[in-house]
Length: 323
Image 1 (cartoon, rainbow, N blue to C red):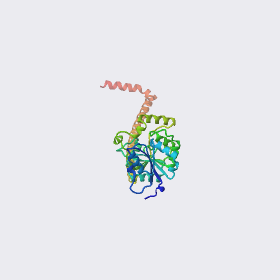
Image 2 (image 1 turned 60 degrees about the horizontal axis):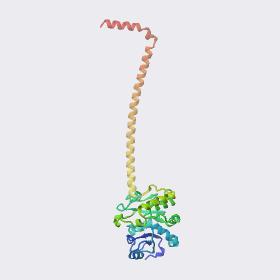
Image 3 (image 1 turned 45 degrees about the vertical axis):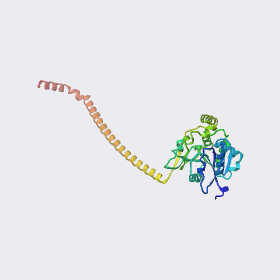
Image 4 (image 1 turned 180 degrees about the horizontal axis):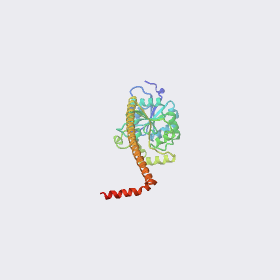
């Protein structure tokens, strides 16, 4: 077995009675420790989660509230870790996917990242939904459900976070604290998916709603964010990282589009030239008419024309008499 003291990664979860934590644990070695806080009252669940955990606590509170409390009370507990993944306890994700997430986070040196959400489960923001054509996306928002932090950046946030917010709004808070809109260090990883179960799959009742009702949680988040001058803007993708197949496909699509564009431009140029030629011919005809009119007016105004007027008058009389 791997020496636990050398594990450089950590998953932190605040677990209740409807958790899926056992699905995360591989049979073999892993690069991470599990730190769990049980907030329920069931003795069997308490014992089961404790048996899965490398470090275990029991206290009431939400995920980030409990994380903050342990961070303040036992700061040395996180000292050995490079990255800390703060996960909801009911997420469905495989041990292989967990390892991949830690590898991607380290390779790209992301400050905060998350797996993409399987569309068959809950997806609260479009930016977090799985995109099959993508490897990962640089974003300006990572949802509170399962943010994976570089430890030093998590500490920056925990030094600001006062524990007031239960769930909603925390993601906007750490996004603001770590300047997610200005940096390119936030990401959604599409080569890893997790399923966030619908409430119906858990009996229709969320355990966080017991801690703080939904409506109250929403209003409280609005008040706190307003007090902090944080605006909850619409999350957006900033950059897409695609695999080679998709890159080549998009390259071909762009080349085809460019060919079509060149053809359209050529056809447009021909049409414009034909239109120009027609205008030019019309312009020449108008010039000829103006020239003839000018000559005619000059003749009518000449002295010769006026002096020969009686002769023309006499000619018209003779023509009428001969009819």
